[in-house]
Length: 99
Image 1 (tube, rainbow, N blue to C red):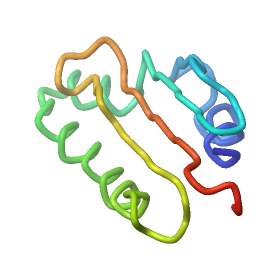
Image 2 (cartoon, rainbow, N blue to C red):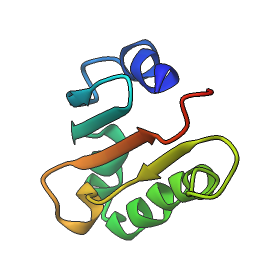
Image 3 (cartoon, one colour):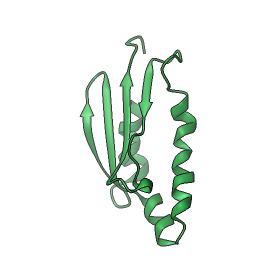
Image 4 (cartoon, rainbow, N blue to C red):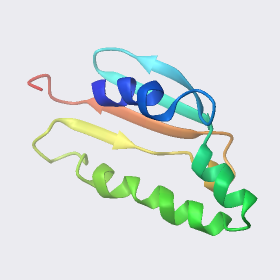
């Protein structure tokens, strides 16, 4: 959660991405990205299908955050710009307070 918070502006800036933090508690963090450089780039170059593949890379690390793994964090991505949603949603929930 800490990485996601600092990464938003430091690495992505505010011109190519716009986002809002919907929930920010000790146990849960929800970030919604409304404007995404990657989504816009692929769409502007008639390669929207590549956005779905590109966003799929998040599933690699997201899979490691599935319940039952020892890290104590659950991750979901219930909405994505590439599937026609108004925003990409990144949802983290701390299941184990030992981390």
